[in-house]
Image (tube, rainbow, N blue to C red; front, side, top):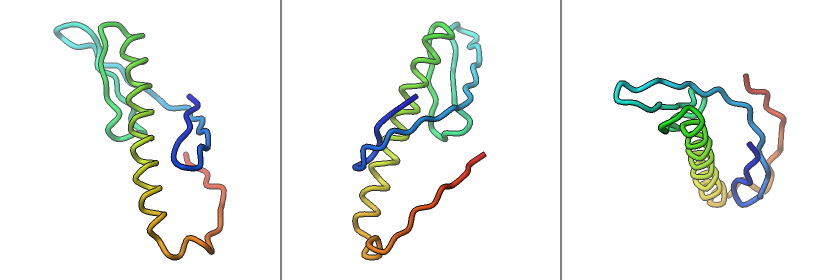
Amino acid sequence: MGKSLGKTGQKVHLSLKARLIPCEEGGFTAYCPQIRGAVSQGETEEEALENLADAVEGVLAVNAEMADEHLSSQPCSSGSKEYDLPVA
């Protein structure tokens, strides 16, 4: 997944886990345990995973917009430093 996020337009490449749950009435529910709120469904496993990828991109885009709004209103942003942050 490569998606431009936020005002910087930086591409983010993530490798995430997806979990599929068969539904009693048919189809599948899919969710991403690493991205809270990223849940979707589909009639087939493939459709559920495609829909989940769209949901993940949507959640990340909204989070990036909210972060941009917050950071642009902060007076201390001119002296900021950037660090690599390993996340497991």
